[in-house]
Length: 130
Image 1: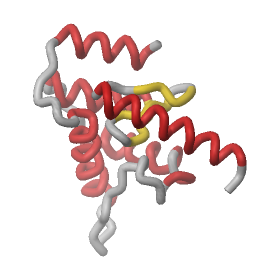
Image 2 (image 1 turned 135 degrees about the vertical axis):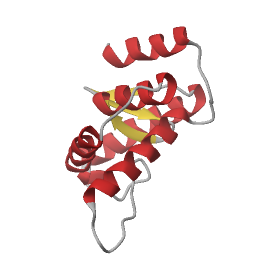
Image 3 (image 1 turned 90 degrees about the vertical axis):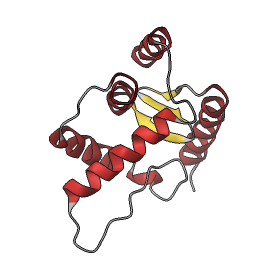
Image 4 (image 1 turned 90 degrees about the horizontal axis):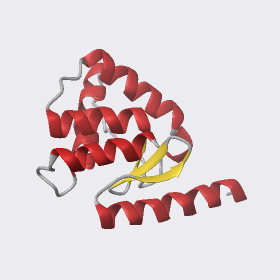
């Protein structure tokens, strides 16, 4: 393991802990956040947040695109607990995997909080954009 990977693990660990305690996303670097113990990019976090709390529809095409980007971007930490894993069947239906992954990601974003006031959702969106 190199120094960069150790640093990334440390930053992810700190952000994941902060996120677990607050129930909100914590910035790791650039557009990467830890949210309830998992790593997520800004676009996926916004999409899942809006889906979970505002019931905005997300098409299968968008889910598939986000799933592919997530897997490519975070491939180096695939074996980490921070990575959202999907265990697929033998048939390798990637569209199905993407739908399952997005559902898991939404559960990660929701955490233990069933509903949030609109003002809190708005504040999280501001945090994700800053």
